Image 1: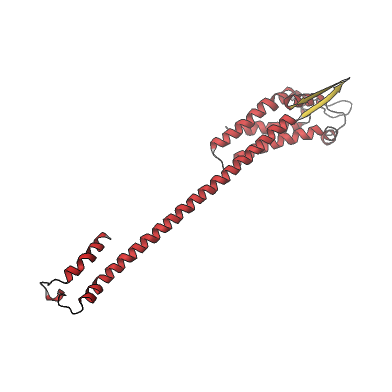
Image 2: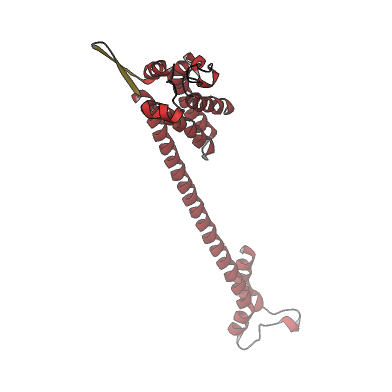
Length: 233
């Protein structure tokens, strides 16, 4: 471009001077302005086309940059929503564990428990099971069984969700560590205390020819949590 600009500036001077070869001597041309214009016009047109090209290319680059910034902002917004969503679910699980309650009366006294103490006392109350009752029948008589099983199912499904979502490894480890703490501090200890009462590991009752104890479904859901927490690290 600089060469073209310089040439356009000096070309009128060059072409109006006598030339030592008559074939290239334009100094005596009648319409010298038309001659110079005709000579320099292709050059200036090419320069103009090049400038237009660079201008359009700069505009395209700017548009691409704006689009990239927009895409980055959109990705950041999606990631922010994912983190808020996962945080809310983790808080719900923590709240559900904390709000799990169990009460029973002993004479004139009523005992109320929540969180891990409630899980422990509830398992204690059903550790011997019921004669001649299937799991479905036993669960109908003890709605807390389904409540506890559902709580554990939500827990290990939340672990799957965290692993599946496209979030940073740091965020993933952060959320998993929160769930791992909740599991070890609120669930693992009361469950382990009554593993020996797991129904499938009991002897068959001679009177009803069935096994009694705490339903396997409770321990199975807890074992899924344990396995998925271990597989993450």
